[in-house]
Image (cartoon, rainbow over all chains, first blue to last red; front, side):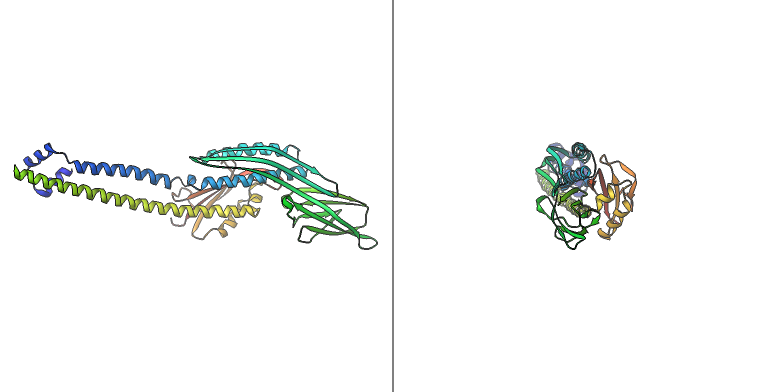
Length: 238
Length: 147
C-alpha cells in the first residue's frame, strides 16, 4: 500500500519501482508500522488495567480491609450482647468461625485473598456485685492480598461494660437516692445507656453517671444496657 | 543509472520522513486516548469514594446495620438517606445481599439502568446489629446522571 502511495506521489515508472522494490524493501515504513502495532498493544493493556473493571480498582482492597476489621470488632460486641441477653455461652466462638468463613468467601468473590485468624477468644460476666462487668476479648490477625499488594494487621478487640453502684443515700424517710457509674473499655463513660434501678428508670447525668430515686430498701438491683445492647446487672446490699 | 540512484536516495529520505510522521502522529494519538481514559478513571474513583463515604458514615451512626441486619432488610430507609447524602448529579441502585452476594428477597431500590458501563460498584460488609449476628452485604451502584 505504501509502495502504491509512493508510486502515485512521485510518478515513477513501473520499471523504476520494480528495481527499487527489488533492491530495498520499505524498511522505515515497516519499522514504523511495527512500532505502531507494539504501541497499540502496550497502550491497550495499560488502559484496560487502569479502567476496568471498576470493582477491582486500586483502593478497593484497602477499603475492604478496613471494613472487615471494623466489622470484626462488631462481631465481638454482638456476641457479648447476645451472651448477656440470654444467648448461648458459645455464641462468640460460633460467630467467629462463621465470620472467618464468610469474610473469606466475600473477598474471594471480589478477587481478593483473605486470611483471617483469631486466637484467645473468651467472654465472661461478673454480675450481682456492687461493681459488676461483662467482657469479651479476641486477638485477630488479618492478611488480605490483592494481586501483588498485601495488607496485614494484628489487633486485639476488648469489649467491656462496667457498672458500679457508687452511692445509696436516704433522701427522706421513705426514699433513697441511688448513684451509678457506667463505663466501657478504656474507661470511656457510657452516656445514653438504659439504666434501671429496681423498677425505676435512672436519669442520665451526661457524664457516665446515672441517678434514681427509689423507695428505701436493703437491696438495690441495677440493670444496665448500653448502645451496643450489652447488659450488666449489679446488686447493692445494705 | 545515476538518475535512478539519485531518485532512490530521495525516496529513502521521503520514506524516512513518512515513517517519522507515522510514529510521532500515532504516539500523539495514543497519548491522547490514554489521557482521556486516565481522566475517566479519576472521575470514577471520585465517584466510588463518594459511595464508600456514604455507606461508611451511615454505618458509623449505627443506622445501616439496624436496617440491613433485620428480616426483611429495610431498604426504604437506606434509599431515603442515600438520596439526601449523595450529590444530586449522581444516580444509584442499592441492594442488600448475603455474604455469597445473593440477593435477599426484594431488598433493593433501583433508580436506573444497572448495565451502565460508567457505573462504579461499592460493596460494604455489615456483621450484625445489637445482639444479632447476621452478616450482610450492601451493594451500591453509582453513576453520573446522563453519563
